[in-house]
Image (cartoon, rainbow, N blue to C red; front, top):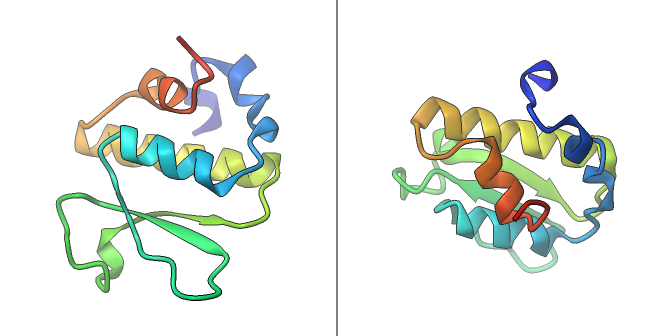
Length: 103
């Protein structure tokens, strides 16, 4: 999937993302649902907006952990891209704009 990334210079800068909330805001801008954070849970789930049953594992698009680093962010990005392309909801540049890394 990394070979399919068009904007490799931005992909290399994904280590700059340090907050789970950055991914949450991006997911909402992309039209995705967020799973509820339970109490002391240190992760966020991004869900398929067409499957409202968040207990159904098929609604899971991506999990975002609390401690972010470059490789984790790249996996999150690839998961969002894969889902968006498969469902025809958005493309790569839409994710970059949602992350405020592209105007």
